[in-house]
Length: 127
Image 1 (tube, one colour):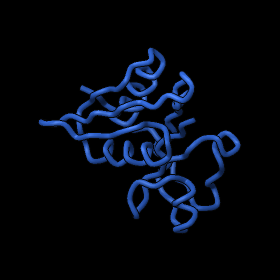
Image 2: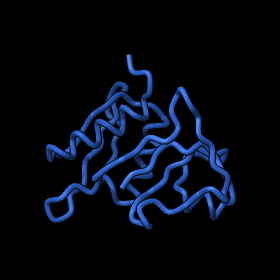
Image 3: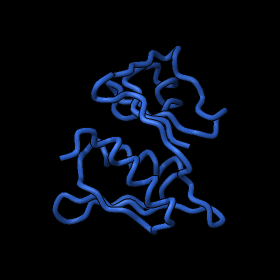
Image 4: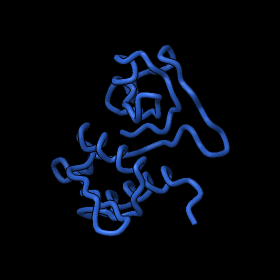
């Protein structure tokens, strides 16, 4: 049993990209699907599909033979939740990374949250 599904999602993506796999499958949840769609929109993965049953398939993206995902850091954990106001949201890796938040407006990137002027639970950073 997985106690932190978001951390499991990130680790699966990182491990698959390090060994240059084309894609990765994992158990489906709406939260993971929303996060995967954001990563697709921001150019970290190529495609996201919901398979038969309760499975989520994510195709990884490589640029010039290098993985688009080079690292990720879980911020808010089940044991310690971390919340950010719009004033706390800063660029990740000097603008070369992405912050993902869970807000009342849904799952958003740091830039989208600032534009909508909402804060929320900081889920993770990815670069």
